[in-house]
Amino acid sequence: MVRHGWVAVFLVGGCGARAELYCGDEDCSPPSTQTSREEECSGELAPAPPCDGVGLVFSLPDECLDDGGETDVGDVLEVYCIDGQARFCLSHETCPWRDGGAGATSCSRGGLASTYMANTINDCSGWLDHELYCCSMDGEIGLR
Image 1 (cartoon, one colour):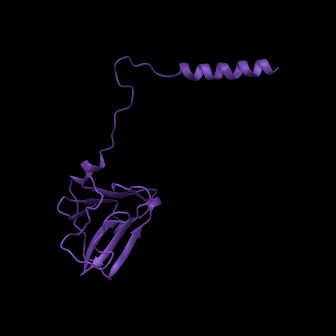
Image 2 (cartoon, helix red, strand yellow):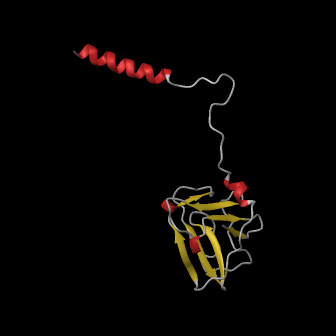
Image 3 (cartoon, helix red, strand yellow):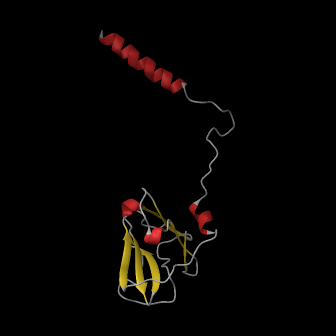
């Protein structure tokens, strides 16, 4: 009986291996319909509206966030309100507003390789229900 069990396992494994598609020189993968995050950041985006409060006013935890920071594991999206202006940064990257600093920009480029900063995942709500956060090369936030 043990022999038959091994034969059955072997046959199932063999069938699975033969079930792969052969496409010759062509790419078998389905065409991608998802635009890259960098391309989304080059589209039409809204500036951050004025904010109320002082200091850290919102944070989006790592389980709700996919980000473009160098240390993209464990980052939190942080939103600070400084002089009525929302300022955005990632928790494991450079952020001038953590210690109460000011500045003319609305997002920190610390750790970002492109204009893509972050987007919400897992059906989480972002700051004021925004889903995409982009930081221009000039340090200006763009939201969607």
